[in-house]
Image (cartoon, rainbow, N blue to C red; front, side, top):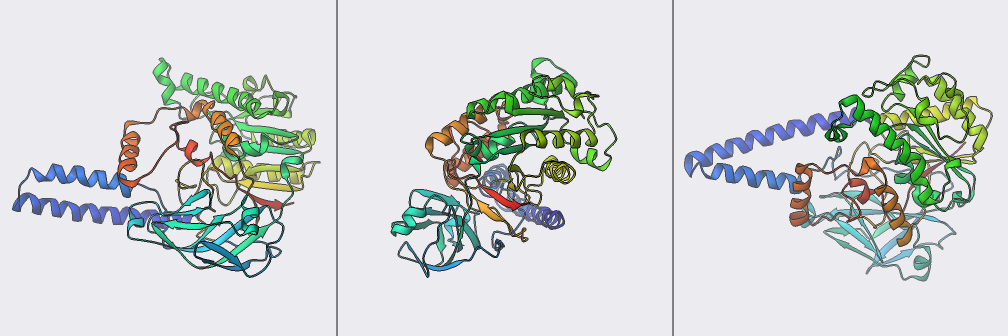
Length: 464
């Protein structure tokens, strides 16, 4: 995936340079043949057009098919969409997660406005200029589908008539003993607040302080190291306090205190100490003082992979989870997220307690930093998968309006999601609101308030 992304990035930069050279040539011609005063006007108009329609970061072509495979026991049902109704070739089996494979083709307006599909009371958005195979999330619509009352419509795109429905059946994992691995404070809330807020027994384990990129705190008169230390303390507090909003007591929240973006280096050299890149700290014990149990890493406080492994083994043995929620190692590219799941898998292999199931989440994507696309409160279509992922079953529980509001408020309590938007992003949003019709929620400015507060949460299921 990284190689393809780098290739597409080079191609994108090359095309951008060519476009800029062509635009410069046009501007010079205009200046010589008409008037030089038009040049700044055209430059401003060109910048506005770029911000409105060409500022998205897509590392694939919208005309490429998504390529998903599912386990052999997930048998697709052929169907057709006619006059807005879905007709299946067979009887709908009992299932909690429904995914509809469709063909989408953007209209000419869909090159400038986000194409979208309406599914009764839901809406799911896709890339501008989309043309290819996509996957709608119909989870939560089972009764309407059985009753024949589910209605489909599209805007700025055409919806193909031939479809395939994948029906997947899962237990309600929220009713099993659960542990959530959060590489940073807020990852648990972004991925799984809806699940953990109704879980019968859950523990949340945050691996790092998340102290880096603390420039916003320098406005308080702090130098870089002091700003990083303050940010680390605040995010540590968030990792322990915010879950209480979802009904998780402090006795079930653990902060390990390792340092942000150091997990991959720790894995490469397990015995070596890796302190903070910005705060200068090398002792993880100060942020562990409120943990509900003593851990092996408390003995020397050294941020090493060996200590992380010992901590995770001890936590698995203490909480004895049947299900562990952790980042998707193939889909979520954040270095700490990938390393967190590798650390968990190693601890499971070498430890005494073996969970039965992993639920994998993606808070970041390789290919599309706007996914889930569309406004807050809508459904979550499947993310881009241009290269095939492992054939995992999906579990997509739904969140009602009250749960979505509670999730938004949990995110609002996270200090890292309250950093003011820079002027350039505010201007871009204003331009896109006016020209591209995009909308952002009033609950918070950070992009995660739009992306994470949705009708669905989405997990890939791997049995161990």
